[in-house]
Every structure is written in structure tokens, then in C-alpha cells.
Image (cartoon, rainbow, N blue to C red; front, side, top):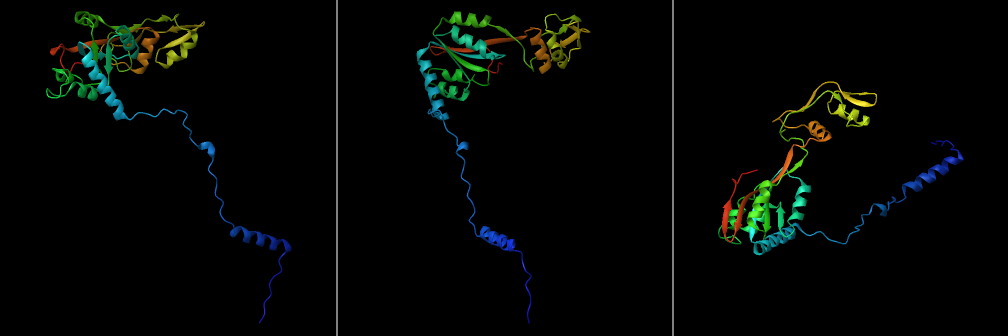
Length: 253
């Protein structure tokens, strides 16, 4: 019994030999690129949250010892820029806003835990994102009089209840550059460009009193330089030498 093996071309043996070598070859391990390695440029380590809270608590209690008057205030239509100006004006005093639970702990949550006499009564007002503490040694009547009349006008934001109805009469809007015409149309105004001047075809009511502003309405009011919002700081209560005085309900604001 015999059988024959078909003859293979010479180059076939080369291919078979190369294939057998590849099957025995160890898998290649890719070296991790160093380009993706994150390098920290700053050597300053972040302080744990608990440490920051402890620092704030100690700072607040230091103010309770240092200042004669402590007020709880409530902000209306909060704006950072006017608040920064207030800090500058009352440079020898201190404002604290935010971290209500830490501020409550510093003041005391009950008569037994009150840091100073009746400070727990002040603590009860610290509810809501618009409440804060104001420490000062300035004259009481001067402080109260200032904040009773303090108000800063600003542009209303989306969601604000319009304080008045605003209607823009038809005609040329010469206060705007011709390049603003597409933007005004995108905000809903029926405008067109004639001889390089923006014209409003009909009387256009931007907003109605008592209704909340949409983002488009808020942008239009700002473009027409109409300020409706009033940033105010309202004093809620006062503590001095253990005497506590309340000015407005606790749920104010």
C-alpha cells in the first residue's frame, strides 16, 4: 500500500516555517505611554472638609467674642458685586453667608449649647440659602438706618416676576448697531433692517407685570437697559449683650 504526496513549490516551505515560528512567539506587551501620566504641578494639598468647617466654627465664635452686635440678615435678589461692595464699605465688620449648619453650631442650637447668652435664638433664623450673619462694632442706629434704605438696582434674571409691563413702540431702534438685528429677531422681536437701521414693525410688549420672565425677555430688558431687580439686605434680628430683638418673621425671604 502506498500513497503519493503532491509536490509543493519551494516558497511554500518558507511560508510554513515562518508561520510555525509566529505560533511559538511570546505575546508582545505594550509599554504604557508616559505621555498620559498626570503630573501635579501644585504642591499645596487640599484641606479636608471637616477641617474647613472647624476653622469656620472657630472664626465665628471669635467674632461672637470680638463684636458687640450680631445681626441675621436676609438677601433679596442676591448679587455678588453689591455684596462685595458692602464688605468693602463695612471693612471693620464681618459678613458670613452660607454653611448654615456650621453657623448654627457656632451660635448654639439650644439654651444649653448657646455660645453666648441667647445666641441660640439667633441660630433659629439661619434657614435658607439667602440668610447670613453680620458682626459689627458700629453704632446700632447707624447700621439699622443704613440697611433700611440700602438698595441696588440690577437687571432681572429669568424667572423673576416682572415689576411692570414694558412695551417698545414701533419705529427705528437707533440705539442698536445693525449687526444686532439677527439677535433681536432670535429673541422674538419683529424687526427688519432698512438702510442700515433696525426698525420695529409693530409695538412689541416685552413683558407683563406680575408674570415671570423667560430667558429671552430677560435678555431683551438688558439690551434696552431696563432694570427691574433690586438687591436688598434686610435685617431679621439682632443680639447684643444678651438682648435679643426680632424684626421680621423667621420664614422671611
